[in-house]
Amino acid sequence: MAETMMMIPKRHLHDDIEIPQLGFGVSQVPPAETQAVVECALEAGYRHIDTAAAYGNEEGVGAALAASGLPREDYFVTAKLWSPQPDPNATVAALEASLDRLGLDHVDLYLLHWPVTAGGGPVGTWQTLEEIRREEAARAIGVSNFRVEDLELLEREAAIRPALNQVELNPRIQQRELRAWHAEHGIVTEAWSPLAQGRILSDETIASAAKDHGRTPAQVALRWHLQLGNVVIPKSVRPERIRENLDVFGFELTVEEMAAIAALDRGMETPAVSRSTIAAR
Ligand SMILES: NC(=O)c1ccc[n+]([C@@H]2O[C@H](COP(=O)([O-])OP(=O)(O)OC[C@H]3O[C@@H](n4cnc5c(N)ncnc54)[C@H](OP(=O)(O)O)[C@@H]3O)[C@@H](O)[C@H]2O)c1
Image (tube, rainbow, N blue to C red; front, top):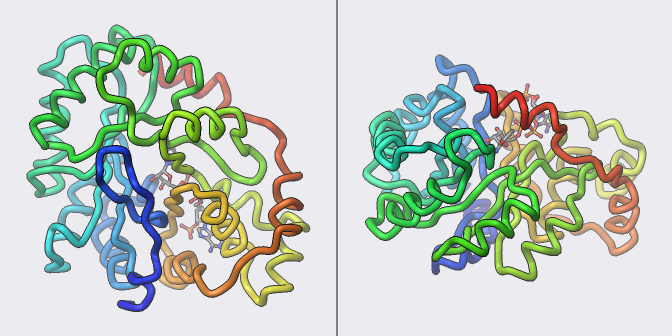
């Protein structure tokens, strides 16, 4: 375990903070199972947990972190505010509620989960997140599901640039334009659903690279992300897969394999239907 932890590279966030490039996502982990699943992940060597108020399982994450006995500075926690709030007090109250459920006095990264226009749009809420960061309730602040146009809006209005944008990204949805924009503006790219929730694991190109390296398709997909520079947060509730997804530092994809996976891009993005559903919540 200690060996794997040592091997997890870090990405520098512009706030002088480092984020482990491979973390553990807990979306859709049932609340009653979350403590055990996160304990398993910590035991395996993960030191970065990605959660959100919307996942309904922050208590389980907090219980696992407390039970681990790990010093606070040894792990990185991301939490998320569901959507823009017209009242700054509501944003502060949402973070305080998350901290309470997590049993923490600060998070390492606080993200605005969706850039919907409901609640007055993202700009006012972002200014509250800036205040939260100044007061160190969050060491860094960022966004999620922001498109270039959403980032451009913040770029015009914000005092602090988002440290990171967490977006749907996998070999079929490669987000090239967005990644280029991030690179140009010093924003770290984080991939949600990095395995496309398992849907890319039967792809022939990925399976063939996995066979050549004596690895699994999931390991090849995660390796592709890491070599691109993405932060990744795969989720699993199964101990063997939790360990498998972390065991990705002992091999490297060739330039040709990276190019073959690059060719799998279908240019899709988070479906518009998700955005309108979110906005309606
Ligand atoms: N910001 C956002 O809007 C947003 C949206 C979605 C997700 N996220 C974050 O991203 C994290 C990951 O995304 P995700 O959970 O949607 O999808 P994912 O990590 O791409 O895939 C998870 C799925 O793949 C399976 N799986 C995991 N490892 C596997 C392996 N080695 N071999 C075969 N199957 C494997 C899991 O099943 P088992 O659990 O049965 O192993 C689960 O069904 C989330 O947990 C959450 O933290 C953020």
